[in-house]
Image (cartoon, rainbow, N blue to C red; front, side, top):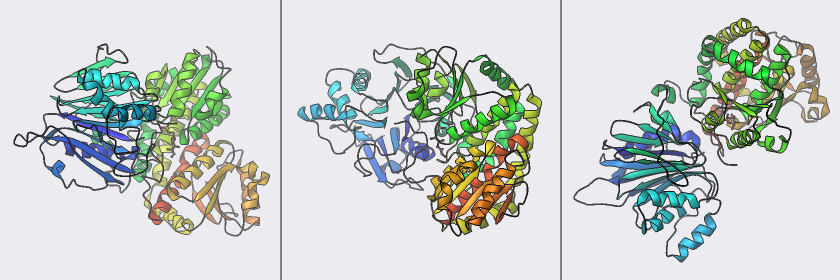
Length: 596
Ligand code: F6R
């Protein structure tokens, strides 16, 4: 939540670099944005910052101010997902101190900001926003009266309660200092220049050499770089890493939205797992075999992938795993011990609801494993064992390719546990081909037609059984979060236990009916719906008589649950487009939820 980007170096268009970087981070928050830069103008001898802030999305905004002129070498920016204080220009970041030489952008919540603000007001500081963030530049300003910039930032950060990432820019020393104990920050290391950002997507265009700042560390960026530990400020050895994302991975390319681009990325992501993950999967399977008590945890879409995984483990490998929604795990972990294995699934690797229970599990000496898409993320660093999804950056708020990548890995793992690796690999290769077929123009037209039919409805229900239960849950989430239609997914067997009461003339219901042990029973559910006037949409290899609308998915045995979700992803996308919504930035949501 909230995107941060900063630049210090030799290039003369720092504010433009920051603006471009922010655009790539907008998925993290998009209710307002702002940039501060020091304008290099010897005649003006300016020390203070120029700041530009706006409400809403960055879109194609071209800065129409002094910031648009290529004459700055020091700049930070922020794209906001509001926590403290409404969505106003005043509340947008960056925030400045009284002298306008300290600018701050922030991700997190300063829990004790009210007390700190009261103290600062007593000392004569003036505030213009309602945010918790604004106390930070004033704290630094206060500290600067008695100590240097680095110590001032460090002491200010040490006073903050809560989980925070801050980036502070000083117009006098021409430095940027970042500090964090939550929320990601990565430094890009170029030639005589440094970048700082919430993720590497805006950085890879300039450099692949990065440093992931760990919790309780700070980075000082200026003519060179130093990494210090917090709270004491001890100098640390720098650990450089290389990001292998391509700059175009972070771009929409020929597509109108990231969501549709990422839907189309799925075949190649799955193929990559099939072709290149064999050894990693075998090693991971060994860890699972050795554990006594395995738990899958995740949030939202990742949680639904956990459910799909549990069914796969049971069906393919006769292996029981427990599935818990990550935000509940802390209330349900008394039984964890040294022999337990907790496997966390998370695209971002930063979701607080996942990172927190994983931290607790580690304290209990349980083994922790991560299936994540993000190298260097908090989860990645915490985990004893890890597999990267290799899906490339996922920018649309609605997760698509990370979901199918997680399921593909779990399917491969289940087959590996059963000693049937080759079969797992073969199924994934077939899945890649089937998804390519589903994404064919003719099928897309068919799904668009259905989207046209559904765009005026208020409710939709999605049903599956067995392996398709998780598909039903994820399909409902995908549709509701981008189209704002109330969508509810449930197990087919639950229909008669309540939801049937909601079915009336024309109520659309999506039925996932693969050719497996669930087929007869789910078709019976469809017939029950039809008898109450419901409009039955079947996603299945076979056209059943009960279907009013049929979307064909070829039989992929246990891998059917991966391909089945594609029509639902597309349906959500096309309904959102039809209704005039931006599917990449659904209202009230942000990608990577790093606050509770
Ligand atoms: C829905 C969606 C969210 C995320 C959830 C967890 O489309 O994207 O439900 O799945 O916020 O995010 P990660 O996987 O980053 O932990």
